[in-house]
Image 1 (cartoon, rainbow, N blue to C red):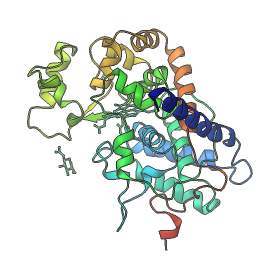
Image 2: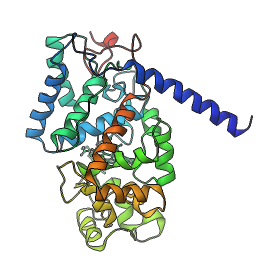
Image 3: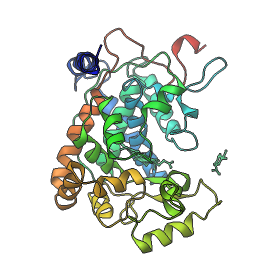
Image 4: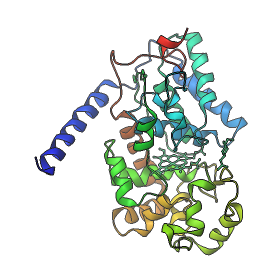
Length: 329
Ligand code: HEM
Ligand SMILES: *[C@@H]1O[C@H](CO)[C@@H](O)[C@H](O)[C@H]1NC(C)=O
């Protein structure tokens, strides 16, 4: 069999799966079963961000990492336990993913008023939307009715989550695998208008980009100097820097202006503007028009959030987001 028939079959499978998700989710899913669900999640996100300005970014990223691995099914919330290794120790998450306690707290409140009703995957989807909105970004109606996975694997997370060293074709391929396209790569990368990254995520750019023995020439000089100071060679890889140094806690289109000025923190941010083609055009469009960015961002989030979800009687509604119900004694 040639490659074309295989690709056609794959495309068919992807379309079928995403249709299942898209048709079974509903913005009023909890209207009768848990009418206060949305308000409780929003209150939880709001109070968490009073304590920690970075928390909205961390919650938004949790939803991204959930959706890219077997669909948005709360799989990345599962703790390791004897005989089970989940996603939390996979490279993209280890010493990096955060916000699990905030989700736990919201889940506990929801279990008190409507037990075993609101899935962990939906809590994370709502929290991501509220995180964006409460940081100054767009609002959209979250489609609901996802159910929680019974299991997952560390490998799935390692393979499916795009890496900060990816070039544009690699970024597009990883997004294509979850039903997203080139435009979604650029709009959703705008999430990096909030939050932080560790030195280890961009260290190579500062000293030895692509084994050239030199820094990445696309880095603006004073920004490079600043980052080299923060992240010395053989320094602490856990030290963090804002992804958008200008307005680190505001959800705006400053990220695209940063990238255009050679101030993209991750290589995967900078390549969007240094690779000729559609991504470059979109970076410039979003840098000039925040309304267009907000519109496209919300549309891409809805796409990402509905891809390949578990619905109807698949999976379960976990009582504790860290443990499948069958293991929760
Ligand atoms: C385009 C491919 C992407 C790559 C390669 C990527 C990579 C990364 C990396 C390496 C970090 C820093 C992690 C660390 O050093 O601890 C990060 C942070 C972050 N990412 Fe992405 N990301 C991508 C797309 C996305 C998407 C689609 C979203 C959301 C929809 C997102 C939201 C975030 C947020 C909000 C942070 C900051 C988290 C915090 O401060 O806790 N990213 N990303
Ligand atoms: C980062 O911190 C974690 C946990 O505190 C530690 O295990 C790890 O070795 C640190 N990583 C680096 C690169 O220093």
